[in-house]
Amino acid sequence: MDNSIHIPLDLPEVRVLETTKTEQGDWLIRVESTQPGTKCRQCGRQITHFHGFDKALRLRHLPLFEVPVFIELRPKRYRCDFCEGKPTTTQRLSWYQQRSPNTKAYEQWLLRMLINSTVSDVARTLNISDDIVTGVLNRWVTRQVNWDKFEHLGIVGIDEIALKRGHRDYVTLITTPLEPTGVEVLAVLGDRKKETVADFLASIPLRLKVTIKRVCTDMYQGFVGAVQAQLPWAKLVVDRFHVAKAYRGCADTVRKQEVKRLKQELSKAEYEQLKGAMWPFRKSPDRLKDEEQALLDRLFTYSPKLKQAYQLREELTQIFEGAYTKSGAKCAIRAWCKRVRKSGIEAFDGFLGTVETWLDKITNYFLEGLTSGFVEGFNNRVKVLKRRCYGIFDVAQIFQRLTLDINGYEQFAFT
Image (cartoon, rainbow, N blue to C red):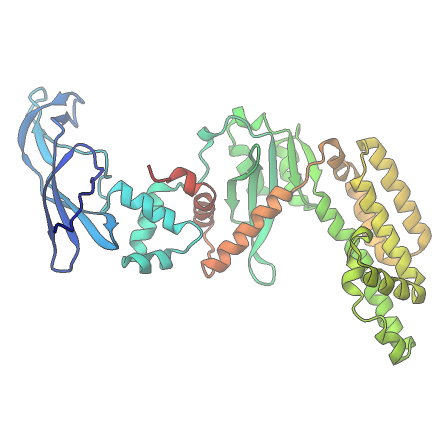
C-alpha cells in the first residue's frame, strides 16, 4: 500500500531533478532552471548562449511536516556575443534574492512568525541564529518611512515615550491615522528635542507636507515650537486627554489632602466607613454603583471641599463632552475657571495657569473633536514591544518592528 503523497514545490521556472534526505534528516531537493537565457549584466540584452553552470546554491525553503527543506540549484551562466570580450552572466531566478541563504517564501514565512514575537524566540523555534533572523528582517522591512506609499497625510500625531524606567531616554513617536481605522508610524526619533522634531518635519516631501492640516500633541513646548516652525498653517490640537489628566490630577490632590485630614480628625470607626473611596471618586457619576454613590455621599458629608472639587472636575468634563463651537468652548472654560477661583481650591491653581497659556490650542479640539487617541494607542504598542524584546533602544529597530507588527500580515501574507 502506497503511503506517499505528491506536493507541488510552487517554485516557478524550475523542475525537480532529485529528492533525497541528508545525514541530518533534512529534505534536499535538487532542481534546475527551465528559464531560457538571461539579460547581460553589461548591455542588458537578452542572451541565450549557454556557457555552463555556476557553483551550487543551497537555499532553505519552507519546512515539510516540521522537517527542514533545502533547495539546491546550480545557476546557469550565459555568454553575451554582443559585448566586447563576450562576458558571462549568471542567471537569477525570481524566487530567491542574491546573497540570501533562503528562498523568498521561507523568509516571508519567517517574518510572519516574527510578528508580535521576538528575534530570539523565532531563532530558537527554527534552530537558526539570531543574525539570520535579523538579516531577513533587514532585507524585507525598511528602517525608515517610505513616503511613496502616501498620497495624503491630513492629521499627524506627536508624542513621546520613555524607553527606560524613571522617565529616561525619551523617544518621539510621529504617527498618522489611517482611514477607516488603523495607524501608520512615520518616525521614531532618538529624543524629544525641538530641533530633532523640526528636522524630521522639514524632511517630509513638500507634496505631503502641504496636506497636513492638523497636528495632535500634548502641552510640550518643544513639539509645539517644531510644528509652528515647519507647519505654520497646521492647526495645533492639544490633546483633550492630556488636559483631562491634568485637571483630574488636581481633584485627586484635593482627595489626598482631605483624606489625610479626615484620618487625623475622625474616630477610627468613622474613618473606617470612608475606606475604599478612591476608585468611586475617580469614576464619573453615571458609572457609579449604588453602594459607591453612598460611599461618596458619606465622604462629601465630612468634606464639602472635596465635593466641590469633584463637581468642578465633572463640570469641565461635561464641557469637553458638549457640542460646543471653538468660541463657545472658550467662553465655557473661562466661566469654569472663574468658578474655580471663587471656590478657593488652591490645588487647581497650576491647571488654571495651563489653561491661560494653552486655551486657544486646547479649544482647537472643538473644531473636529480630534484627539491623540491614535497616538496613545500606538504608545501602548511600543511599551509591549519593549517588554517583549527585553529592552530595545535602537530607534531604527523600533520603527522596523512596529512596521512589521502593523503591516506584516498584509505585506507577507501567504500566496
